Image (cartoon, rainbow, N blue to C red; front, top):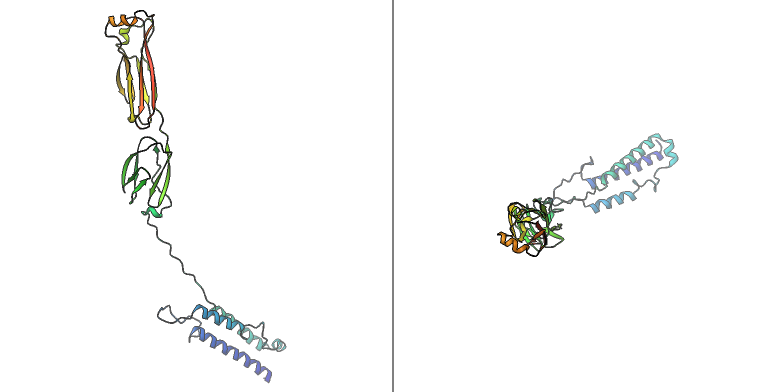
Amino acid sequence: MNKKNRDVKFIIYQSLYIFVVCVVAIKGANLDLVEVIEDDPTRARISEDSLRRLLEILKISQIVDTSKYKLIDKNLLINNQELQRLVQITQQQLSVVQSQVTPQIQLPIEEQPKIDPKDPGEMQEIRIGNIQLTQYTLNTLNNPYDTPLEVEGITSIPPKSTKTFETGGQSSLVIRVGSQTKTVSLKPNEKPKIGMQRIASMGEDTRVTHLQSSVCYRVTISDDFPGQLDVKFNGPITVKSVGSGTYDVTMNAFGSRAAFDNYTDNKDSPYSVGFTVSVTDKIAGHKITGQNSFIFGEW
């Protein structure tokens, strides 16, 4: 082997020696490239900045950056297969060292706060079913939570309980549980309606005695909240309740024939006597009136 070949081998071996020293400095005394320092907070660790600095040193050294430094004559390398093999081994070892010393940075995973399903402050929305509230009436609402439920401006419902409260003319209400709110629209309170059905036949030939002994009209009052209605009848009648919002009306105008004659004196037949029914919503203030009459011609 000539002197030139010996010089080349010396340079290669010297480079490998420097390699080993770098690896030992970085990884510890163990040359299998496995991390020596365990995850023990009481022991010293190589910082991330130190690893980065060592990597920069390797990049600018002759044994790493072969694109800048030509340690071997190219013509000699072409003609010497043994030298080519040694150079290839060196390059492979360089790749291994670079991959081992490159810091593997792992960002800490931020632990997400646990949400207590019973804590309304962490809820995305208030879930209390399909709430239906109406203006000018008594509404009942259930609070299923472990904290008070506020109907803003009206009342507070204790945890795990139900409460009835009166609403006014609000178009909507804000319900609050903890820091969460929900706006609920209020359904309008409809006005009551009066219906009258004539039961008895009436006309010029109708007798008073017949009308005063029979049901003449059936009056029906409908409303979405009939319990808050005040119903009043006015006139010479007798009224009998026959169901929720339903009344039978009988004429009761004359107690005797003399009273009939006195009423019809100087009047033309057929004769008539009227009555009225008034309905008032005690909360909403709605007021409506209906009226009708009895028609007759004889005692």
